Length: 151
Image (cartoon, rainbow, N blue to C red; front, side):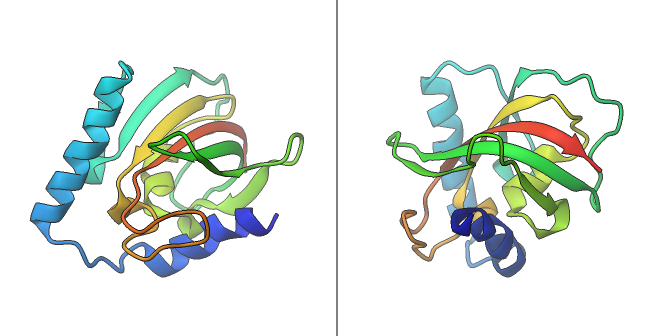
């Protein structure tokens, strides 16, 4: 579970601590979108250049709001396909949405339980320009997420 805490702590320390110029953000956003295009995903671009693809619509009734607690299962990979984090089977990660990285905060907002989605997160909405464990600096992150519960 050490890796799971990583997302939480990074969200607290990095969301809002932005060292990217608008030009850099634009370039990184283009890189993220090009990755999704190359893979022929059906996606939409959200705030900050976040790429969202809904893989399966959930049937839950409660939408995730800014202060919601969420229980999610996920797998995180880099654009080269290398996995850097995954939840253990049957042990979803629980956190307040406010404590997660910016890409999760934007991408999970208004989603419901049962939803499965893919996020392509540019560095300024992820872990930024500092290398962290298995994640190089300025990495675009790919997360496949299943929303298990909203509470």
